[in-house]
Length: 417
Ligand code: MG
Image 1 (cartoon, rainbow, N blue to C red):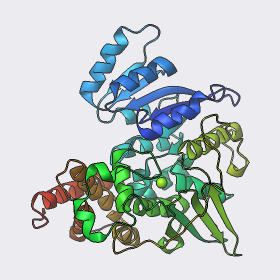
Image 2 (tube, rainbow, N blue to C red):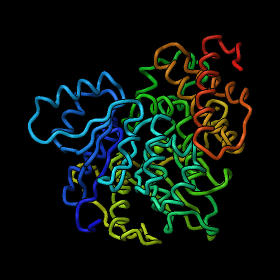
Image 3 (cartoon, rainbow, N blue to C red):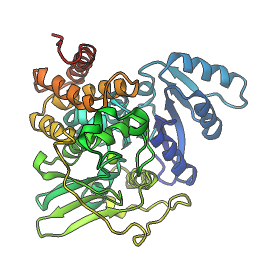
C-alpha cells in the first residue's frame, strides 16, 4: 500500500446514521480517503445517490428486493458500474476484497457481526461502530484482531474518548478505572409508574443525539449504556468493576480514564458523531502511514479538519452535571453488568433478547416497561457456557431470539426448550 495514496475504505451500513456521517467526513478529505465499497440494506434511493457520488467498485445490499431495485437503477446510469452483491451476508462477502484497505463497520445490530469478523480476519483495520460485535463476540473478535494485526478503532463516542485518553490504546496497570457517560435519555426524570405508557415516538426522540430508532430506544432504557459497558470491557481488556457509568445529561464529557496517581483524562466535545468518526478515521490513516509496524502511537494522529462540526462552547453548556445511575428505574444496566460477569455467551443472549424486545416495542407490540423484563427472563432461562467459535455465538443468538419472542407472545409465561 502506498502511504501517500488515499486509504481505500469500505463503508458498511452507509445509509444509516453513522454511515452517512462517516461519508460526511470522507467527503471533506478526498486526498486521504477513497470509498471503494458501500453496503446497505433498504434505503435504495440514498444508496443510488451515494454510488453516483463515490463511484465504488463494490456494492452490497442485504435485502434482495432492494438489491434488484439498485441494479435496475444502475442500468440507466453512465460510467463504470460497480460489482453488486445481494443477500443477507453480502457485506461480509465484499469486506475482505484486496481493494479494501480499511472498513467503517456501521451496520447496526447482530447482523453487523459477520462482516466485522471477515474484515478483521483478513487483517483490515476497522473503524468500529457496530458495538454488538464486541458485546456478542468480544473475546473472539479481540483474538482475531491480535492474530491478524488489524486495528479496531472505536467509533462509539464513549469508547473513542477512552481510546484517546489511553496513550497506548490499551489499559495498563496504571489505569484505576474508566468512566463512560450516559445522557440518561428522554425519561431520566419521568416517574416509574408512567413508564408503561411510553410510546415509540416518545422513546426515539433523544434529547442530545440524533441516532437510529433502535439505539434511541436503547438510550431510553439505558441498555445502550449496558451494552457499552460490555463493549468497553472487551475492547480495553478491563474487569467489569473497572468500567463505571455516570449520567451526564449535557453529553459533553464522553469518556474519562482515571490513573492510579489520581490524574483523570477526559475527552470533551459537542455531541456530534462526526467528531469520534473523524478520530477513528484518522487512526486508520495513521496505521496506513506506519506501514503496519507496531506499536503505533495513536496519540500522534494527524487530526482531520472539519467545516461541519460545531466547536465546543464550554460557557454555553455549563453547568456540567454528573449523577449516579438509578439501577431501580433503569435495570438494564444491572443486567448488563451481570451478563458481563457471567461471561461466555451471556452477553450475546442479552443483546439478542434486547434486539427482539426493542423491535416488538417499536411495532407497538410490547410495553416500554417490559423490554428489560423480557431480556431478564431470557437470560434467566439461558444455560450459559463458554465458546471459542462463531457458530456457538450464532446458536446462542438464535436461541435467545426464539426464547424472547416466545416470552413476548405468551406474556412472559411460556418457555422454549
Ligand atoms: Mg455511545
